Figure 1 (tube, rainbow, N blue to C red):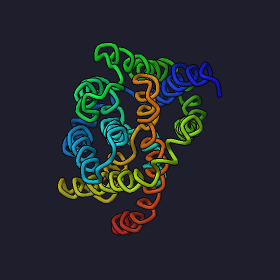
Figure 2 (figure 1 turned 30 degrees about the vertical axis):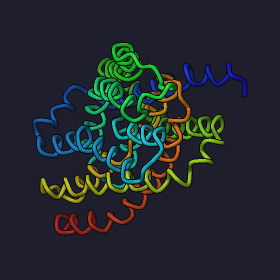
Figure 3 (figure 1 turned 45 degrees about the vertical axis):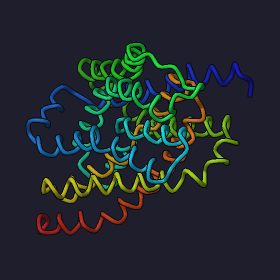
Figure 4 (figure 1 turned 30 degrees about the horizontal axis):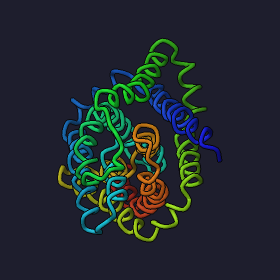
Length: 298
């Protein structure tokens, strides 16, 4: 694969794919949906706080615990500071979780991490890579503007379409519903294809840490849910929202913003691990949801 093809995919195809995902999210959102923050403040605050504050600490801690090489540890940290993705909303729907809660948490984390990701990266790059000469360059204002362009603006555009053309938005949302998963698979496949040697060299060293981060994140979501006395549906939703990240955005950050494929190794593996583990959680948690709903049905 030529360098021109790789550069075109990294700088054009991947960002456009992410914009399409965020636009599809906007098609399902209305301003009134944000009223859930007032209706269920504990649930929203629990999911938002866990994602924004506890998950990055978990990413740092697991990287140190497993003594990952700097690039793998930084790649793992980038995953932990990214928002939830629309894939988490789809998994929540499949698992009969609280889809409204999942959508609002995905939207809120997507809006806020546009500003937190560049700030955290400006600290993390020199800290993880320890002054090495091959450190990627990062402009905080430039990165914020880039993330606004490929995340917030498409969300707003989707919301505007829903506001003024609700029927068209519903049809478009139906067709675009599988988009996030398809784009995620395509982006991971491309990233693996152009860095297959790096992936093979690091898969054994990186996978245990990646699996641990994902399982610990979902377990943290369940524990937080229990702490705020959430029901089984809400607890599972918090677990999925905490453990299923927007890997496409993480890959955009590493490939398009930082232009560093070595950082994408952990994200490629995480994208597959998170879907597998979330599916296991759904199957395991299904009985709890059914048991909780049985008295209501009776």
